[in-house]
Image (cartoon, rainbow, N blue to C red):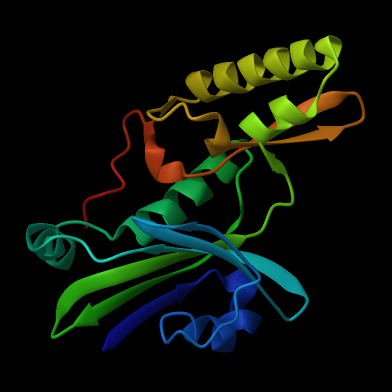
Length: 191
């Protein structure tokens, strides 16, 4: 197994722990998804992170990721940096890991900081006051408008791809599952 690990310089102190992720030597505290992809939270060194593993892909996609395309993990890392640089809140990118076997792409991992916010759909159901629903809708529409102004299109409008938190009297939003966005004029997929 050949492994490429890129760690955001801000998180270089965690490099030894991040190496353990593709080896399976980490204890996950909470698993959010265990299907097509694997998404879970892990804590180390006093910080919590979310690890997203893009599981094995069909042969033809492995060939593309081995030669022409960046891994989904690298794309997520770069898109997260882009969003943050343009004033869009998302989980800060920590690292991406690409695993190759016999020289060919096998799987990849995107590691980000854990944001202790609530997924949009769950927040909607937790709140029972109509006035608060209106605030959430207004805040979300403002968030969507900001994305559009920045040239960012969400291709999967699942409310759980946006995290919500309340600060003071206002609701704020953070975009996750960022491989489901398109940034006009930017192509993150090609090597």
